[in-house]
Image (cartoon, rainbow over the protein chains, first blue to last red):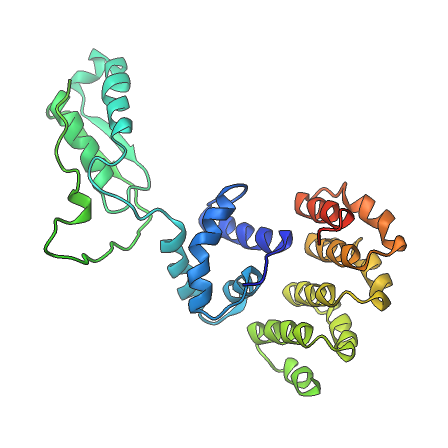
Length: 167
Length: 120
C-alpha cells in the first residue's frame, strides 16, 4: 500500500465526516487505517487516495458507502455491554430524578442503539429498580445485523444476558 | 501514453482519475504537459489528481508551476505544491514553504513543515 499523505487522509476523513458525521482525526486515523486496509486489498486499490477517488467517482460508490458504514462503525453489541454505563444510570441518575417522576412514565432516548441490545438492557435494569416506569424510544443508524456463524453456541448478543441484581 | 491521453476526453470521471494516476506512475517527462493542462480542468477532482500526479513526478522544470499552485484557493493544490517543493529542495521553494507553514489549513501547514524538514 502506498503511504498516504496528509492531503490523502484529510480528503478521506472529510468525506467520511460529511457523509456519516464521524470524525477520524488524530489517533482515530490509525483505527480507520486498520479497518480500511483489508477493504483496499479486496478492491485492488493501492492507497488512501485511490480509495477516495473510488468513493467520489466510481459507479459502485453508493454500494461502497454501505460497505464502509459497517466497517467504520462499531458493530459490537450485546446485552449489558459496558455495564458501568448502566450502573451509573441506576446509581447516579435515577436517584436524582427523585419522586416527582415516579408517577410519570420515563421516556429515554437511546441513540445509535443498532439492533436494540442497549435500550433493552437499560429497560431491564430500570424495571428492576422502578417497575413499570419505562417507555423506551429507540434511534437507530440502521446497521445490518451480523448473521450467526456458529449455531452450537449462544448468539453473541446474549453473551452477558444475566441481569445484574440492583443493589 | 498518447492512447491513455486520447481516452481521457471521453472517459467517465473515475477512469479519468485512474488515467492521471497511471500517467504519474509511468513517470515519463512527456506526460507533464498533459498533466499541466489538467490543472485548468473544470472538474475540481481532476485538477487535484493532476496536481497529485505532478507532485509525484516533482521535476525541477515544474518549479514555477508549483510556486503558482502554492497560492491556489484549493487547499489540496497548495498541499501538493508543498509536497513537491519539499522533494525538489530548491532554494526558490523555501520562502514559499515558509509561507505555507502558516497556511490556515492545518494539513497544508503540516505538509509544508515536513517538506522543510526534508520528510516528504
